[in-house]
Image (cartoon, rainbow over all chains, first blue to last red; front, side):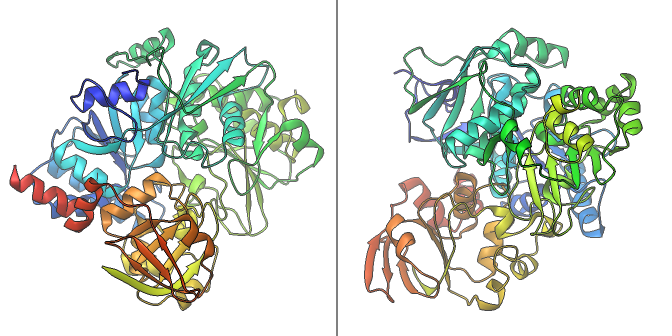
Length: 421
Length: 165
């Protein structure tokens, strides 16, 4: 029976020759992870199961990243709880502030994601890791608890949407534009319960483009967003000291519920308006509205990688952030932060009048390091623009690429890179 | 089990930030979460909700973040059951796992209005809108999920399974 790439991985992890859409299966897991918001809930549930230890001390990762460095006493308590659990259980992959980063940027960088793996994370953006050809999906804390105890999770085998990449990226078009454009076409529930399987000219996409695209698969409701493994994937994994794992490919006659073609030759730079990621507008249409902004955030699990920092620096170099705008830049990991220093990007950011923060999810979810006041508008490279997501319910978030965010910071209204360069 | 209560009706794509804003996630105390449940989109909810009440949403209920704090907040608010046209997958999973009943029933969800009285039979899937005098049948759960629900959630289910092995 023909299977999609996702189905092939799930079949192997369930110990079966084949699986079919809708089938309920139990899979062995290669990695289970969580952060200081979701793990403490899982830890309480874990203890209720009465097991002595975790299924495998080397297959669990715990990372404080959301409200860290601890934003208040309550948040500090959560981080402490996770750290103590990690110590008690002998968890190998616990990482402390100063040696960590935003989980979905950090785990691939540490070589902990292998192509062909089955991964769950107690964070909805776990789908990011599909960029490396793994099956990775977000779950809640109770699923994480059961998985820490048993090393297994149940899944309903998903149907898939085939996303075919055609052509080559135009200047300043990035993975963020591609995924915002795709969500605009599918809608926020267009891929609900299904896999997004990317194919076609994926060689036109850098690994950082792919991470950004897979990262936001959840914003179309998808269970996972997966890329085939190619030379770029293998080179990335090797460069980060990881294991090349097992390469799975969809059968040529695999069945998809839908096929969507992304034509890079014509696809516009895209902005998602409040209050849903599906509200996609081309940069040309957006510029005409002259939307005045108060804040820009460049970072997050979606766009805090080195190529995102470089794209922002290219625009900000020799320019100043507009007088009425706060521009907050957050490299997603310590390694990326250091690269920004070594490559001279930090000087560009500071000279432009931007604030640069240590790695944190912070402002993306209205936690800290850039919360919005009533009536404020923000251009953000993050992933959600729901009501109240980054602060006051009366604030507004426009989702965009690092290049658009940086250009908007300079001009003070939402615009594309060519308005500055 | 029968749920019987008044309807709190919302629209499509009710996200988990709306159910419980992320700024409240520095705690997972159910009472604290309940005190802030729905506040960003309906600041009257916490004053209006009574034990046993039923939340009704449209399409893609519970989309967004994986935070289990969302179903915990609803359960602790007294919500006995969520009925929607359909659910976002992580929310659906979390609700089953923590023992918050969820029912997928497009017609019942579309017809229901704020303040209607609904009686929902979780065993048969029959939903009666007592105010409107209409009856509906929800999409049944697969047998495997019924096992988790019957055990009282995933932790109890897993505990029993570990014991039997």
